[in-house]
Amino acid sequence: MQDIKIIHSNAEISVDPNCTTAFMTMTAPENGGLDITRDKVNAAIAAKGIKSGLLESDIDDAIKNKCYGKNICIARWKPPVDGTDGKVEYYFHRETAFKPVEDENGNVDYKNLGLVRNVYRGTPIAKITPPTEGTPGMDIMGKTVPQRKGIPASVRVGKGTELVNNDTEIIASVDGNLTYSNGAFNIEESLLIRGDVDVASGNIDFIGDIVIRGNVMEGFAVTSKKSVMIHGTVTNGTVTADGNITVKLGCINSTLTSNKGSIKLDFCENSKITAAGSVESNSFVGGEVFAGTAINATGKGVMVGGKYTALQNITASVIGSESYAKTLVTLGNNAVLSEEMDGHKHKIAEMTDKVDQLGKILITLNEMAKAGKLSPEREKMKVEAMRSRFQLQGEIKRLETRVKEIELTLQRKQDLSVSCKKAFYPGVSLRINSYVLQVTTMTPHSRATIGEGEIVMVPL
Image 1 (cartoon, rainbow, N blue to C red):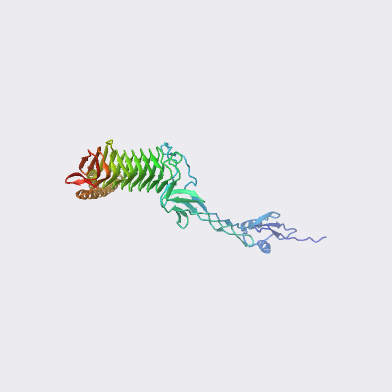
Image 2: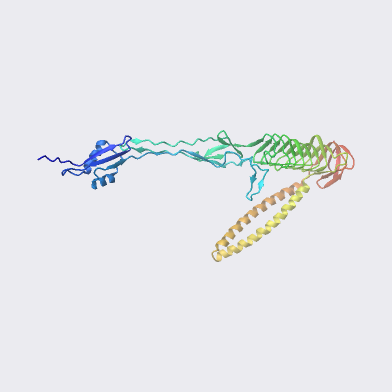
């Protein structure tokens, strides 16, 4: 009779080459051998050097259920979590689309091609998301597996922009035109138009200085919050600026307005010119010119036909013409200021009535509040009434201050004159403050001023 060999259950462990997983196969006992135990499995695991990622519940289930002969995963690594790369989210398109602008009502302006993108200081341009580190992993042998760390986004900070908020945002550091070049957004504080303002460029509306190398063509408009320099002419066009306007050649049948500065041009024909400061040109022919300070006809110094108004002085070589062209010259701001003052007084009276009405409403609402709680609608009415009353009182105060300034100005005597180096011609009507003089004969080399209660001609 042969001896019967007793074979106990055993655990065989295999580890993949990258040490990411381990598998166990348990052999079945034979001839009354002992079943596998956890201690025996642990010993087999330790013998392989496995230290991490053990699937304890799976091991226990396999032992409990005597899963002999099956290949069971007993350990799995913890893979690393790679970091995410940083990224840049731009709030503006990099390319400027030169196409007609459509408003909210669907109307298309074919003269507005979107050439300029105005941005103000502090405007967000881009959001920068920083990279993340990620987390390292660990293989089943307990060895750390490094992760791939995120790479910072490639960011270029262009001219006129800056990084803020711990380098997580790019904003405009100046007012200007937003452009994209050389991998970065840039802000140009001045705008250069190398050619004409025409169908190729469309209308120009910019918050900074504008320089136009060519002309402003018929039907097109240029607007600036600062100054405008035009090297050519303006023909049947419109130029508006808060600052100075310079037209090196001149304008024909156009409208030029400087809200806070002066206007200088070579010639002016049949145009409407308005400036808070002075207006200067070699010749004025027809049109309407208003200057908050002085009108100076330099060079040829011709003022022929049209209407000219200045609040301080007017200087020219020739005013009027031998053909008796009707030329209206008004000097002094008494009439202008009186009209402005009357308008302000009318507004003050209207706003004072509204303030009184709002005061009565507030008195009523306050009495209702004392008697009981106001409804939400009446509480809102009270807040709106208080806000409106406060705003009106501020505006009244501002207008009253302006009225006092005008009254003081009107009380002061003005030393005003219209100087003509060569000649005044018949057809010229002179008005200095409230005094009027019709020029009936050619008067050479004279200065028109106020003397003895009338306009008199004083030789130069």
